[in-house]
Image (cartoon, rainbow, N blue to C red; front, side):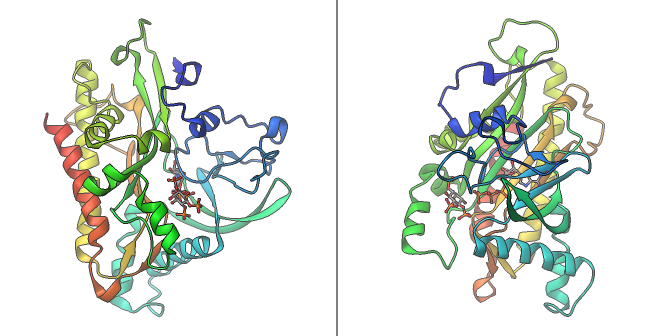
Length: 342
Ligand SMILES: Nc1ncnc2c1ncn2[C@@H]1O[C@H](COP(=O)(O)OP(=O)(O)OP(=O)(O)O)[C@@H](O)[C@H]1O
Ligand SMILES: O=P(O)(O)O[C@@H]1[C@H](O)[C@H](O)[C@@H](OP(=O)(O)O)[C@H](OP(=O)(O)O)[C@H]1O
């Protein structure tokens, strides 16, 4: 049984996620967006651009949609230059996968193709009407598909989150956000949600209950390094007071997260082709599997770490490795290792 934390007071008044947590599929009712049949707002979206009420002054802002029948998410292209870069990125990846070497030359294509396992699958783009206006969306694999208790964390990578074409103003705005975590760890936390068994909270309820805890960017911006690490431990259900079954589950989880993170780092160590600014890792796992996991079992598909958000991907300057991304990824691995070993 699930007890939603949206019944409780939000400690940091994180309005954006409160809005998303309710996420009523109202189709135009009470200021909700009017969506095409068969689509709904992505209720596991934890960060990024979101729907504004249709009666607000900035009603052009739209968030991700979900096609629950087919297991897709649909991401709106957003600002023209960002949308175009992201679509180009997915299309060149698809061409590289298909072995079309004409586009960039063979060895570049092989490098790009070898990134595919770490990126959501791409199913082209399409136009859909939202609030009676047509928007272009890219269609991606839903990384939370099939999960009964989707625990999702968006970790933005790198000390530098502005791209080479950013204006001085954009650089300044980016430099002033998430300052401590960005500078010390090369990481920031724009949002997450996690299902917590009530026996690891102060709740006095008994039985198989969970609460869902959601935090957005205001929370992420308030964190120092210790707070970041504590939040990661909470997200992985790795608190020391957990039951034996949960402790085993969380051990399996941490081991598998580390394996996937190290594979992505390995890709970065071998590539000199692209630099990823303001890109995120999306860490997803099914909280309902934690109490069933056995340490001898190989985790199946309930733990997924993927790179997302390619709105600011650029050709590598002077053929250099992406040190900025790797600095963040190495420190993320250290944080997860420190939770795993404690
Ligand atoms: N393939 C996916 N599967 C499941 N959820 C996804 C997927 N892609 C994105 N999301 C969800 O949507 C959120 C926003 O995604 P993304 O960062 O791509 O959007 P954005 O609007 O470009 O963000 P930003 O404002 O940081 O530029 C993620 O935090 C995640 O919750
Ligand atoms: O973390 P925050 O405070 O929400 O800041 C947003 C974040 O930096 C996004 O990456 C950025 O979108 P882009 O990457 O697409 O630039 C967005 O710019 P925007 O408001 O100009 O869309 C910012 O507002």
